[in-house]
Structures are given as C-alpha cells and as structure tokens.
Image 1 (cartoon, rainbow, N blue to C red):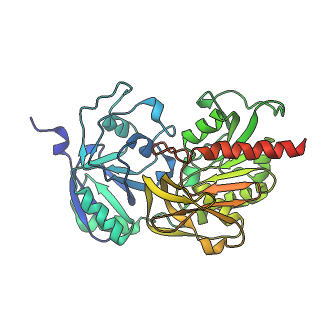
Image 2 (image 1 turned 180 degrees about the vertical axis):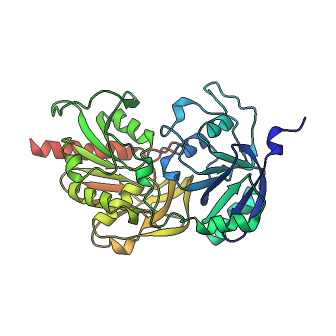
Image 3 (image 1 turned 60 degrees about the vertical axis):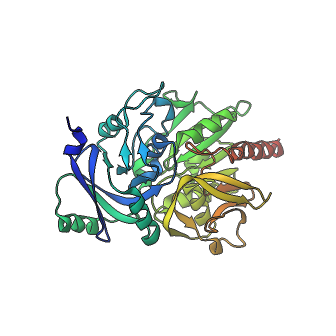
Length: 380
C-alpha cells in the first residue's frame, strides 16, 4: 500500500525561479515566507516552537526528522509560529518515552505545512550562495508562473513588525516553570529579585533560567512603554529574542532607551539589536543568517571560544556603536558582533538559554543576577 504522503505532491518555489519537487507529509494548501536553513542535528521541536521564526520557512539540514515526536516539556512557546517546515525525510514511526504526539499531528493541529522529499542539500547550498530568499510551498498547483507571482508579491521581512504577532497581549507571572494565572503581586523588595521581561517573542527557556536563578519573573507585552516596565518596580529588565526586522520596532527602542541606565538590562538576540539602536547604532540584514546550534564565538574579555545556539537574520553594525559600547563577543565564522556591554547593561546576539543547543554560555544568566544584586547592594 503506498504511503499516504506520496499522494500529496508539493512544490517549493523560490524567488529566483528555483523549483523543488516534494511531498507534503503534513498539512495542505499554500504558505509563503523567507526560506532559511537550520544546521542543528537535534532539537527540531524547540526550533519549530521558537517565535523568532515567525515569517520564515525553515529547512533542516539534518536529513531524518520526526523520530522523537513531540512532548510538552520541550515547548519554547505556546505554539508554532514558523510558516512552513522542510525536511529531507520524515520518520512516520517516532519512538520516545516522553512523546505525546507525532510531528505530523503537531504541524497539522496548527495549520502548518510540512514538506519532505526535496534535496535539502541542494536547497541549503543555493541559500548559502544566493542568500535567504522568499519562497512558497504549495500543494494546490504546479503552475510555476502563478506561484512566482505570489512570491514576488510577498513583502518579505525587511521593514515588517512581526513582534506584535508573537508577543503576549497581557502581562503575566511566570511561576514554577510555566505561565501562571495568578495576579502579579505587589512588589515586596525583601523577597525575590524581580525581573521584568519585555516579550518580543520570548523563548520559555529564558524564563525558566531566570526563575532557576532565583528571580520572580514578570512578562509584559512588547508594546509596553518604559514607564510601564518601571511601574512593576523591577530589579532588572530583560529584552527578549523575537522575529523580523529590528529597524521596524521604534516603539521598543524607545522603551529600552527609557530603561537603560535606570535598571540592570540584559538583551538577548533581538534584545541585543534593540539595545544597539537605543544607544544610536544601526542594524543590517545578513546574507543567509545564523540558524543552528554550532556557532563559535570568542569571549573578548577572557579569550575563550564558546559554542552557541543562534537564530537571527539581522545584526548590529559594529561601526555604528563604536565608542558607544564595549564589544564583548565576536563570531568566529564571519566576525559579526555577538555582544556588547555598557554600565548596568549587557547584551548578546546569540541564545545563552540554548534549547536546543550547547550550554556553554548559560552562565550569563547568573552573571546578570550578580549585576542586579550588586546594584541593589549600592542602593542600601
């Protein structure tokens, strides 16, 4: 009996006219996005639940995906935000003791298309040579001209505010490893350190690690003003990761500018780019971005090389923040800026919370808490 997915042919068409034939192992219809590749060998569940992939169609370079299914413990947000998922070969019979559903079911429950059977090595090579491109996955037509017209009309990521589409809409308390329905309590300075997280598309592991480091974690929407953030009387503020073009987020830059210097601030990924703009810097788009769990960076303060998890398509232009912030990390593959430090403020372009990925830089969370404690000690 032929496999059901073999009956559902699908096409991937890129803006340069490239066409890849495959099969939809999950979902049907059409989806548009910027096509990028992720080099991680593990962690596909964390990848597809990362809000930073909003607006993107993600290709996994590792050939076999789906073998561990999906479980509730490895979620990095409440759902899926990517536009489509491309793999070489789907494993239909997952086996893992924590699994509660298959990757196919998970994608279909969220209305997402999963594409398999294309030459992902050829696709990755094309994206590396030409850069990330807009593309469309379709199970509805094989009319290439029609699909190319839709790709051409798609706006892409530059200049788009995707953060509002993934941010929480109301403040909430993160408690015991999950969002809590409890009312955010009045500030009690003698209790735990309070960190307010500006949710630009925050990954859950950031919140888990803050809590593990002894913090009371309050999460607020990305459209919160600096005054809103400070109204919670935080001991520290974290600007989270998130999707899209950082230059399209002046309201978040304004909020950051209101907070920087008044409280210890930690920026991660998009948060790093926001801080760069808040001090007068500029950002630009990378050719094909950094998406994976094996990016080497050098800690310029210690000389140590650390392996990091990364997911970004934009970076802070180092010359734009020269003499405005100290450079703390550099990417050893392409020399892009990976970190900055100012008085009371630290930021990194990569993901120290990993999930997935190595935990080489997880120490930054305790470092941030130490800065908060030191600042509180001065105030006494």
